[in-house]
Length: 165
Image (tube, rainbow, N blue to C red; front, side, top):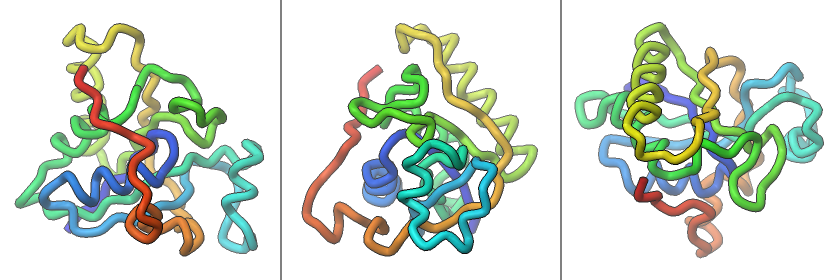
């Protein structure tokens, strides 16, 4: 099994999309990453991240079976489920915690992320400049339990929809 970490706005919809629509995804965990504040001792990380002062993004850590789905396919799927041209937001959610980002875990993921992003930029399918950040994975802090598989637990569905670029 391998890990991939993505941010694309509200983590509830990103998590649900990867967990329910991608064969080969074994597990998903929502959390916070990409910031400069240690959240390990924070009593309410969500509240801290929402201030915009921690530098963290709401993200999803995906555990996947590379025999069933490639990292390239996961990155490609990410570009289908959100608008990568919106800087520090997705729809009504605004702030750096809602930025579009790919957090790579090794050099191969780095190279694939850049290649997929470039392919999308060159395709002409997206009418504006892609602002998706590609950065090394850093400490990942799982979100509070009530955020995990939020839509599955609460019967609500999707802040994201599959975008037909």
